[in-house]
Length: 320
Image (cartoon, rainbow, N blue to C red; front, side):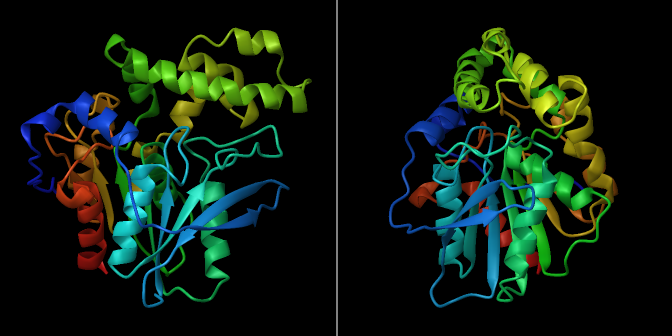
C-alpha cells in the first residue's frame, strides 16, 4: 500500500522529538490498569513472564504487546496500550522478554531484536488456551522489529493472527545503532548501555566460562555490547552479522497479513534505512505511517491515549 496520511499534530511543545521522547519515557503515568502475572516455561528450560489485563466483559480477542530495549511490561507505552485495548474490548498479554521481568533468566542467552522463537512460544501458549479467535500483535521499538520479522519469515502463521503493528521500528538495526551512537543521542545510548551492562554481572557469576569481568569492562558502546555479548550468546558471528540477519526490513515484502508501521520523521533513533517506503508501496498488506512528529515512542495526545495507541486500535478494527 502507498504511504498512509497522518493527521497527528500535537501541541507546539511536543513537536520537539527529544521532548516527546523523554516525557513519554520518564513522566507519563497510566492509572487504573490491573495486571496479573503468569509464567511461561520455555522448551529450553528458560522462562518469560506474561502480564495479563482483561476487558469487561470477557473477550475472544487478545493483543500481544512487546516492549523495547531494556523495557518491560510496566513501561507506560505498554500499559497505555494495554489499557486502550482493554477499553476497546480486547484482552492484553504484555510480554516481558527473558531477563526483563525483574528476575535474571536461567540461561546465558537473553533476548534480542530477532528472537522470534520466543514470540512464537507466546503465540502457541495463547492458542492452547482455546479462548481467543482473534490475535493481534503490537511491538514497540525492538519489539516492533521482532513482530515485523515474525510476520515476514518463512512460517505459516496461525489463522487466529489477524494483524500486526510496529511503533518506532528500527527496520534496519545497523542504521538505528549508528543513530543511537551519534552525539545527539549520547544520553540515550549511555542509559541503555548502563542497564545492559548491569545485567551482565549476574550472568558472569552464573556462567564465568562464557564471559569474563575483563570483557564486560571493555564494553564502551552499544556496538561493543552486541559484539561481546549479544552476538556470542545468540549464535551470530559478531554485531554486524546480528544486525544483518535480524533487521526486519528484509522480511517486509513477504508479509501476508495486515501490518502497520508507525515511524515518526523526527525519531532521532531511526536512520534513513528504517523507513520502508518502497516495501510499503509494493506490498498490499503493509501500511506505513510517517507522522512529522512523535519522536521515539512519544506520540503524546489528549486524554493520555497516545496517537499510536488510537491508530493501532482503529487499524485492527478496520482490517479485521
